[in-house]
Image (cartoon, rainbow, N blue to C red; front, side, top):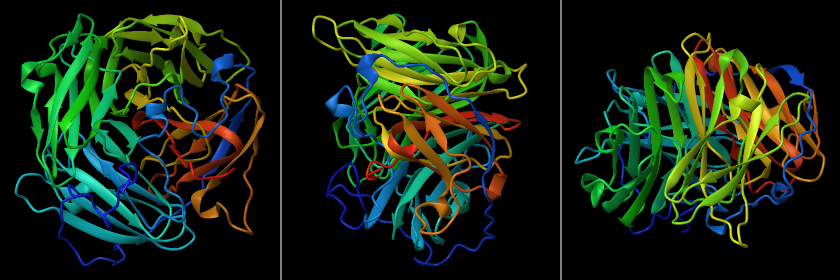
Length: 512
């Protein structure tokens, strides 16, 4: 069995823990409310051409072979079953971030989904099983399955293609991220801080039957740090643990993280939480959730972020190697302006924060790319992570983070949080060919008879196009973006519920 797509039907020797729960196969008792997506505004495309070395159009394009396969991605329609892992969040009333799992069916037949919550230790995992109608999206609060302080969540889908993400709620802010379909021995994060009054948590989830032993190290403003208390750290089988980074790495403005498993495999995410804390000259208030990368890469693309409503966009670049790296950072505007790439140095064992906002006009949606330059014929790969902030004075006060994508694809799935807000779907074409893309509700995709995308998007080489979307709360379904050439897709949410950004889930099995 490949570790990129583990299943419960044929688990490895250290496979997922056995579980107990309600009778499998029952349809979850709930009122199903589904509504169409309302596309409101299509903003004009821009003529912002990316650097020549970025113009890759292959669905597996990456500057580093180790990261060519993403941690997230929609399984093929012929997959018998798929397992998804969701490390971050809590399901107790006094927890710091209430977690909800979002499951979106992309199939033309019913899909069965089983949610398993692992409380860790000797406690028995609890499951809940439901059936999803074709194209249906459901949101399940983890507390409805099991209320526990350290929930490790596994979602198994059977019977057709599906996408799984999760949403965290903290105060008046919401965060979202795709769950992952792979466990790995190494995980990397580029963005983090341990300034006073901030909370930086690393969530490590081991869903398998053997303990994992890990070392956690950091690159910071003052160099590499390997706290003794985070070496040979045990992540027990069937457990999720929280590592408060600020307890081990004191008062560092920039902190990038590397988790390495000596034995076993695991899944990692991180959260950053602020209560009106000033970092790098700006106020942060809210929670950001980010998945980890399993390897550095030479090309990253982040199709999300905005300077609307006072937004600030910063790109963290982390270099975990012993050599300096040179990176071309390009902001691709949704508007008529063009910006040249800026080259930045990322020192060995160091972090560089690029404030994209200083070059982006106000009230502008943006995509960001980072491409490593060759120096003496050699590229030193990095990890790229976007952090977007909206200050307390903003009507969309919040914090949002997402890892860049190392791949392009001709189909992407956009899941949404249960909020009523305005959102922006961003479609970035990094390749040399013009692209035609369509956006449809999941239950309309690949039907022989049905609606067509309104409107259809024409996106030139190296350009961005955005579609404003009205989220309809609990009745909202998933959106599918399909293009005739590979693109990258993301989502930005702004409103009374705060702010959230996320890269969509690629379907690398789609042939275009």
